[in-house]
Length: 114
Length: 114
Image (cartoon, rainbow over all chains, first blue to last red; front, side, top):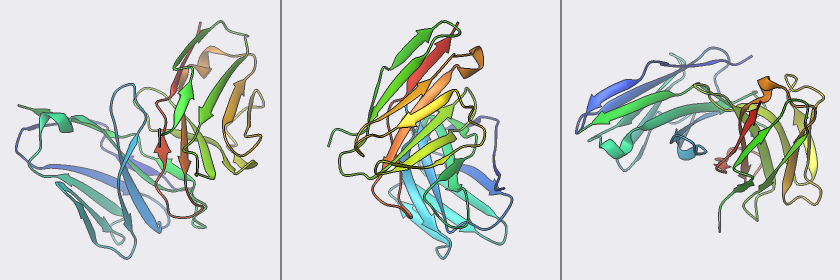
């Protein structure tokens, strides 16, 4: 079955720097990959979706890359701000048939210091 | 569009009691998902619906858990004979399609079993 690995250790960076979070998967290459943001005590909020035929996707200060050879996605936040502090979750389809069901990584907590 | 809502937001119950949670998805969304999340982990899939049909239930889910979506609108998740291990955040999400669509999450119901 598909497994996702995200850095379990928190990432601490200074305001204005670029944060880079990693998502690795272990099994089949998914047709797409999603990133979500979760604040404490709240449900996840969708940020970006990237498909297997896309190398890179951008939205404002966010950038996601998808390398099917490395079985890895990188999530970048440029010019980071304290308001970006949250847990970021990577999610993939749970099976190759793309039923819409997702599995999530454990998330990486980002702390941006002013 | 008021987003996905869940009630109650918090529930404290004694071991052995039954509890029921409600989820109201975004009105035009035909897919509805239930997840469970414990501290430091990502959401774990429990079950999902396409309209009123329950398409899949996680093999990890015991028979004490049941979910319904009677008219393809709101959904309920019931846990019978609660155990301390059931303490978690229960998240509901909805999406507008059956393939590659992002999921919109509610705020969750925090269950504490004493």
